[in-house]
Image 1 (tube, rainbow, N blue to C red):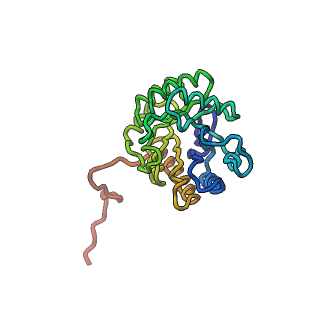
Image 2 (cartoon, one colour):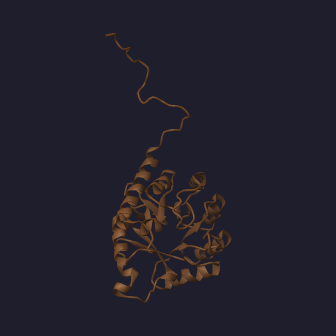
Length: 261
């Protein structure tokens, strides 16, 4: 706990947030969660049968003693729809935390930042801890924070694309000005993408397809765990500056001239 992730006063050792969709089976999902070391997973409220029990229930495969459930408003295209879904999640027994998604375009799944900001303001007033998924736009992130968001979640690339971090400079600017955690959400394809996000200064990374769609789901979950940890350590350690020309690893001053044979 020497370097915990703290969101709205709640501490997490792991800085990897994982989804619950697209897995080959609930059992494989559970094994992936264990391998990832995650302490928070997202659940799409509109895509989960809250009345299901036993092996048919996705939620029965989440270790609620160890893992915090973060419901999300996936599939919502208006502020009103997202607000109603968040209220439904709270009434269904989830906490007052919500990963807020308001999609603006069906093909790209890019967020509708105007509607997202509207929904954030409403839900914050109602006592929700709001974590909005947004574009990698520093201005949008600043407005969401000003509206009371407990964290901002800029995308690294379009949802499920696996393209990796497309706009590293924007993510660094977002982090520089944010006073709440910055969680890179969407676009991660492999472990190096997660490491890059953390090296840029992100406080955490959220992913789903990169793990659930891998050839070996559980192995990839373990790789992502290590990548996030390594990226965080590298960020804290501080990388060397970039130079245009070579710099000798060993100092040249004081070298002893070779003796003639």
